[in-house]
Image 1 (cartoon, rainbow, N blue to C red):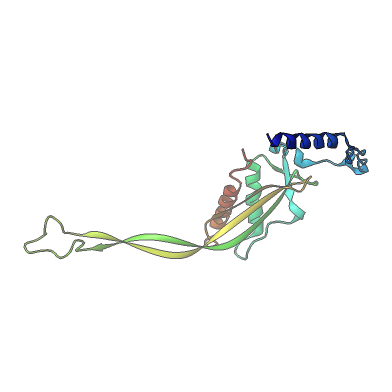
Image 2: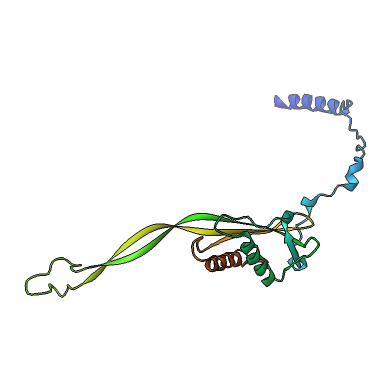
Length: 206
């Protein structure tokens, strides 16, 4: 077999290579010391966010001491009174002489909306002309044809934001619309209360 001597030669070369010294020597170096601030660093991303305890919010005050803003046709004091009444229904009392657990910010703005109304116009011949001798094929008489009208109205939009007084984080934010800026002062006040109630209808979240 001509290949057997060649295999023996390669085997000898391999054995000689194994006996030679390996130029690559494993070595280990000690890890560098941790920076001094490592012991005081807290990685919040490594822990789940704790559930917010809404039960600890018992009082409130206006954020930065500012009453809600509004437009010319609405009295900001009426909006402030409406929000105060809705917060009271949720067990939140105004803080007197101190900062409340919640800071409240609110504003009132006027926006335009498109509405549609369906009217009915009576057609004396809804199924075509009347044939000879009266109604044709059992049809005839008067029928109604719907007419859709599109018109624009002004609505009042109330936005309410609640912030944690300690951390400054947002706790609640919602807006709702109701009624129009037109009407008597009593009607506008009722519309403000309705919008404020809608904006806080889901508080506290469950």
